[in-house]
Image 1 (spheres, helix red, strand yellow):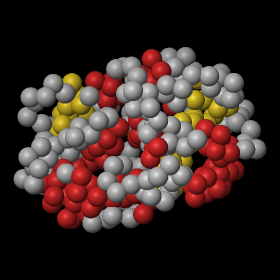
Image 2: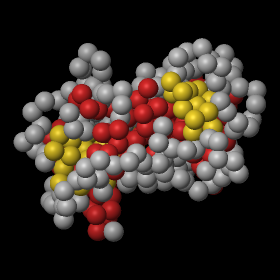
Image 3: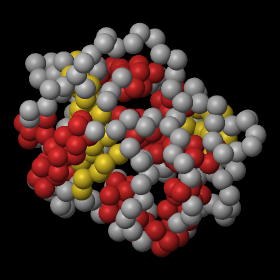
Length: 291
């Protein structure tokens, strides 16, 4: 399966999708977009990809004549996000559900016309308390991806002091969505706690993100949330051969999966992959705030 994602990362979409179709967990003989779908990517560790699948499927569902919604099975956290959206009938993924894999969704996006359809943000939950009136732009930030052991993943992380240079000279309210890194309160105006970010109910995270003007980040689940709700995202990602192939498809092969996201791709997968991205991210942020 890794070979399939390597093909997708390189822009070889037909051959990559064909490889996925040979995997029993991905195989799908039907090319329509009729549910039910299991949104999880077989073999993926996180659930950000499920939101990518949901965001792509929303373009199709928004144009359906009937209003029943497409049935989907998803991780509990994803269910807490999609349950507010009438485009979906959401079920918790219990394993034995009979839902289709996301393969047809990817086919229609990467080799079909799905990306030509209008992007429709996911529907937001009813908001509780609103952020206080703030004359400064509100920017969400995250700079490291941390594994279950609390260890930084080099190919998905940027040293904090280097990442923060993107924000040099920016007069903004900074909100940290960085997990498992205590002691950041002195560099930001607000910290979204780990127990909120890691909660099965993501309503509070969504509300925090909907209050942003922009998010500057590496590849995280919060990046997928912001992008799927149409928040502006500036995302820095390594030029990895297989994992996070969707950022390379977006940036290098004009498959704009999330239209409000600007992706900068670094070189290779070593610890310094991010170096060519910093100046570009700073320029994009400046242009975005001026705009």
